Length: 418
Ligand code: ADE
Image (cartoon, rainbow, N blue to C red; front, side):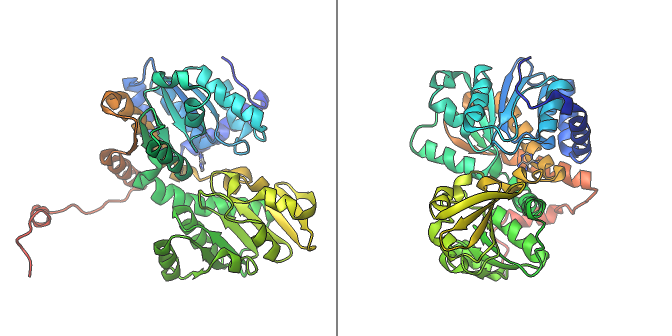
């Protein structure tokens, strides 16, 4: 079995961490047990491009239990957990192409290795694999019956492809499931972004002014958790509705140009490019901390930062200090790559449990239904979303009420009013 990982000797610690995460993924475990018995993907080849973490390892084990052949590569050059990659290869017999800190050439070599495997189904986080399939590897598109997309940025890209009529296969937007973004994006990103910033800098959030750029589900989570730690939170938004929401949630809302001079810590979570640019850098306080928790490092204009800097040096693991021509220092974390997976370990397993249960059930849905699907971006079927929610509630030991017959009837009638 071919692979490209950093060091197979790391497998022992990786296995322990995968098993620890497994204990916090009860919904995925139930699915894995069913897959083991039913072998619903026997004979299928699944190619995944995801962050190579303990949680992803458990998704890969579940897919393997279904009888499929699996290959995995990293969806970001800096998010791989090398011990997990080693254990997947050594202990679970899964082909992995991922090394933390790989350069762009290696990153694409690894994506190409996944396509060389000729998958029938793909899983993506950020849409780089689908983009490669639709550009340099077009001949293979006809062999792929469908793909899942894990993240907001990826779904934005895929919807743009659909609009351009460039998309040539069905996509399930896993990110858009309620049991994904309400929990993974909000509580997962909220916690793991704070974790990444603290691991990289050791900074005390209390009393700091934190500028949250983007008030989508990830931004909402990060703003909420920063406030919980005692920070003064400013939100920058372009969407008027989200801006009202941020204001009514108790945050100060203002344009980035104004927030630039007020913030101590800046974090982008937008899915767009250059939301912090050199005009903003020039206005920042000396020693400001700048990072990104969106999918791509293009949210921060790093080239612009380089242009207005007279020097740069590494001052801590994951911290590069730029000295601007105006003499002020800017501390850029993790080269602007997603801080929660670069400096920390991504979202906790108990929240990835729901995201990856959706992934596993959507693979099953595509295998059963691909002949009926067109080249479009589809939502996760409601039944899957609700099933994941019910299983998660069960695993949490939470019981809820049921509608009475009278209440059901009332909700379906229009005659009863005042
Ligand atoms: N995205 C965010 N956190 C993650 C994790 N722990 N594993 C995989 N993908 C993630």
